[in-house]
Figure 1 (cartoon, rainbow, N blue to C red):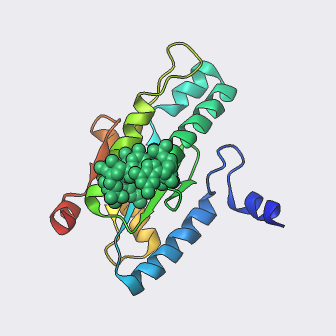
Figure 2: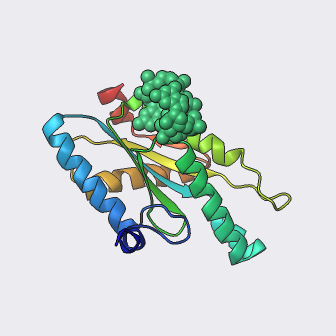
Length: 173
Ligand code: C2E
Ligand code: C2E
């Protein structure tokens, strides 16, 4: 049934696609892009200092934060863009048929929506860091790896920011 399919493809807490299905969709989108030569923007995003939220407020609050951040991501992308829960507090966002300029705009929109988010608990705030990369003929795992390296860089450069590979800027901008 379609209910079973939803369970197999999505993450129960956030209702985003799960790790495995996000990857499957990325492979499919790359396959399509090879035929149509369209552009793909990939964002790997990770909530900043999420462990502290769990430690200070407890896991139920941590889950609430995850769920609300997932909602914020979903509300800031189009219906045919893809958002998956890639790991604990990590999200894979795939923007098919998307230019570099739009991708940057969307990433910034998501980052800001999380930064501005107020939760029901006084004083609780969270931010998100992102790596932005574009498909350049590589396979899906290479593509996600390069987004992951940029995400790492975003964390090292102070968090709450979108990091973009300089070579991508010269190739696509
Ligand atoms: P904008 O927000 O500056 O977006 C510029 C272009 O970026 C869009 O051109 C579209 O090609 C791309 N883009 C922006 N957001 C997304 C997204 O979430 N997913 C994808 N796949 N692409 C995105 P477009 O379609 O010609 O739209 C022109 C303008 O119309 C947008 O400028 C925005 O001001 C408005 N707009 C269009 N659709 C929406 C919408 O669903 N909600 C809102 N609030 N504004 C929209
Ligand atoms: P949708 O296309 O699935 O987009 C979902 C949400 O992603 C939008 O919610 C908005 O927060 C964000 N978004 C998508 N595209 C853009 C964009 O180009 N620029 C900006 N700034 N944000 C974008 P929102 O605005 O509440 O819109 C809900 C739905 O209403 C959209 O779902 C779409 O179906 C429709 N819509 C809204 N504005 C436009 C528009 O200007 N043109 C078209 N064709 N549809 C629109």
